[in-house]
Image (cartoon, rainbow, N blue to C red):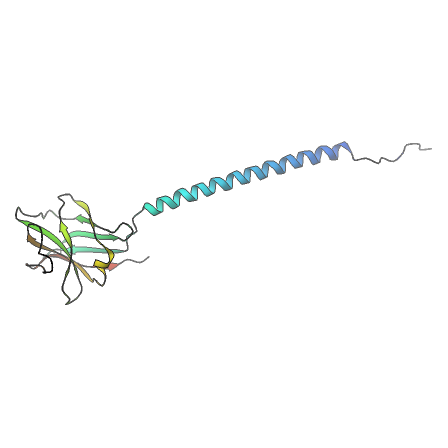
Amino acid sequence: MNTSSPRTGVSPWWRIASVVLTIGLLLAWATSASMFEQLKAQIGHLQARLDQTPQVRFVSVLLDAQGQPAMLVTHDPQQGVLLVQRLNNVREGREDSMQLWAVNGNAAPRSLGVVESKYQTFQMPVAADALAGATEIAVSAENRGGASAGSGPRLPWLFRGWWVQKSV
């Protein structure tokens, strides 16, 4: 006769397996939470770098009278500056200044400012509304300090180029 009584408790193997699985699930949850926080930190860092990157929306290559590139002009509306890069060796004389203008067809040109830097690449603060409606950017040679307020350029354009909105 079989006198052994049926087992009423849980096998020790099942208890060990459930403890191991619980520890595994806790480790997986902790790892995923840590990775999620690291991913959020990386996204925040990249977002900050993107905010600091100039967002160029308009560009112009100014050409001289022979059709050779003379200046590259881009506008960063976030910073409110024109980034100007000289592409040739033309410089202002002792009594002259170069002045940038926003041109819109037959309307009177609007002054964007006087080039005061001798460097190859420089920035000029320019409000976005000063560029509103412009179809071209041009440079004229003016007396030292630039044209007087309210007047246009006194000489023909030194450099001129289309003001183009680049695709986003």
